[in-house]
Structure formats: C-alpha cells, structure tokens
Length: 345
Ligand SMILES: Cc1cc2nc3c(=O)[nH]c(=O)nc-3n(C[C@H](O)[C@H](O)[C@H](O)COP(=O)(O)OP(=O)(O)OC[C@H]3O[C@@H](n4cnc5c(N)ncnc54)[C@H](O)[C@@H]3O)c2cc1C
Image (cartoon, rainbow, N blue to C red; front, side):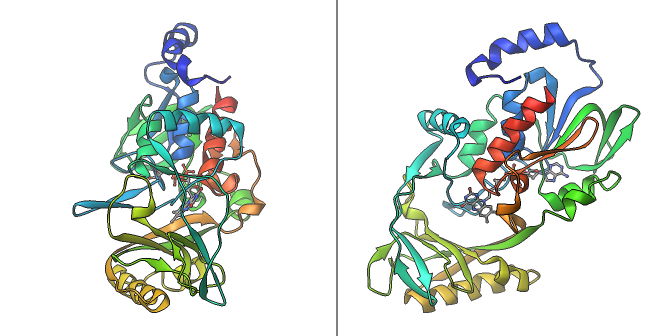
C-alpha cells in the first residue's frame, strides 16, 4: 500500500484505528535516515515505524559541511531523474524550495587534460545545500537520531535491535538501509552471504579547497564542473559558487575510487594538501586546502549489477534496501525506499 504525501496526515488516524499496534513493539524498525530510509518512512503510516539514525541529522550521504562562514556539499554533488515516481518527489521538493536545478558548464578529462564536455542533462542540487533535501524529506518523519544500532537478533517471530548504549527495541519487522558493509556487520547472525559477496562498495576521499580563480579547459573555456574521465586522481570536481544561491570560493574535489583506495588510511590533511596541489598543477590556479572527508562506503563498485527493485528479503520480516541494490545513486536510493514501503505495509 502506498500513501501519497498529501494523505499522510489523514492516514495517521486510519492506521491507528485499524492496526492497533502494541505500544512496546515497533511494527517496522528502520535503520538509517538517508534517502532510502526517509523515502520508506514517508510512504508508511506514521504510527507504524520508528527510524534509528546514528548521526545528528537526516540525509546520510546527501551531506554538506559547515566551513567557518561557508558550507559545501561533501557527499552527492547533484542528482538526476528518470523515473516518474522520483520525478513526483522532485517536483514537490522543488516547489518547497528544497532543491533547484543546476546548469554547470561541464568538462571532462581526456589523456588527463581538461576538455569541454557540454551536455543537456538536467541536474538538481539541494538548496541552499544538499542536506536541505534530507531535511525536507524528514519533515513529516519521526527520527530517533544519535542512536546507533549495534546488533539485530531474532526473538521468536520478532526482532530485537540493540543500540551501542545497550537500549533494546523489539520490532515486528526490520528494514536496514545502511551501506552494504555496515549492513553485513549488523546482520552477521543472518544469511546475508549471497548479498555481501555480490555487492561491494568503494571509498571516496572528498576534498574541499578554496580558490577564487576560474577553472578552465586546456582551450581556456570556463567550466563549473568536471568529470574525472581518464584522470587517475579526479572523479568529479565542482565549483560551489556555480550552484544556485551559493557564493563561496570553495571547490569540491572527489578523488577516484582507485586513488581513494590506495590512500584510504592517509591523514586527511595530507590528502587535502595533495589534492590541492594536483588541482593547482592541472588547472594552473592558486588553491588552499581546506579539509578532506573520507567516505569508506561511497558508491557501489559496479552499479550496473544492481537490480532495479532495490530491496531484498533476508529472512521473514527482515528486509534490506539501499542504493547498492538500485543503481547506486540518489534516485535509486529513493526508489529502493519507495519499494520497501510497498512490501512492508
Ligand atoms: C562522495 C559521494 C558522491 C556521490 N555523488 C553522487 C552523485 O553525484 N549523484 C548521485 O545520484 N548520487 C551520488 N552519490 C550517492 C548518493 O549519495 C547515494 O546513492 C544516496 O545518498 C544513498 O542513500 P541511502 O539512504 O541508500 O544511504 P545513506 O545515505 O548512506 O544512508 C544510510 C544511513 O544509515 C545511517 N547508519 C549507518 N549505520 C547505522 C547504524 N548502525 N545505526 C543507525 N544508523 C546507521 C547513516 O548514518 C546514514 O544516515 C554520492 C555519494 C558519495 C558518498
């Protein structure tokens, strides 16, 4: 069963009257308040679920970071839309001002040289920053934040979730939406080998540098963002001030999975300095390193391998869902959560 957004308020009453859930058992425990967990929660009757999120705020990899008086997106840089179900959400978020379209002048690397690569792709970003989308999605959703689930075990036909502080939550059904490796830790007692051996994720070092100079191609055309192409170090570069409503001198650089893997355990300040130097040498601009953030589980290794359903039943009442099962992007995560809600309700 699916609940259109404008019906959620009305359905609070219907669901409590017809389902009469026990006060002590959570009907559906959702682990993770990223795009997948939030999308699922928004489609479920509010009294039927509880979300547990280890971080302070919602959004997961839809992340931005405050840097003195400025801010920068450090996770997903933009997202695209193909599926009408995601399009409907995008329209809603857009009319609420939580996202805007972004029209960067695009580049890429060929033989490690920056070249122009204009396209007509419609791209969206959070407004004013990417974390706004998580905040928007969580408006009608109740979240138990700063609550890290440590273990999940079966208890008869139900489950018990234990937090890192020892609190226990009994639940009738569980939906785990963490990245696959974290899911494997949580569900070590269950039969998850078929998933864990099939789906792996790669790391990304994200570095923020400051520079008030323009990025240009080797032909001196200005660009706002650049795919990594065949460059060994860069995966994606974006100029913050090219995103709507932003005014900063920050540039976000995502290192390639290969480079990130090799340098995974390096000190963040060494990463920031190394990436800033690489940017200076590549674009002939002055840069100052600001910070580096390590995503251990950023993107699926092979997004093409993922199914379109985005959800998998591990055991009776125990489900996993996430971008790693649905194409490895923001849209996939949304559809995974959407699908999960339909199966769980
Ligand atoms: C560097 C980077 C760049 C990216 N670029 C793009 C892009 O350009 N376009 C695009 O479409 N996508 C991009 N992505 C991917 C996109 O961000 C993800 O596909 C999407 O945000 C995944 O959402 P999710 O809810 O499945 O997972 P997550 O966002 O990872 O959410 C999982 C949540 O679970 C929480 N959690 C984990 N363990 C526990 C626990 N034990 N207890 C409680 N809570 C827990 C986490 O804190 C997190 O909030 C990028 C990702 C990264 C990291």
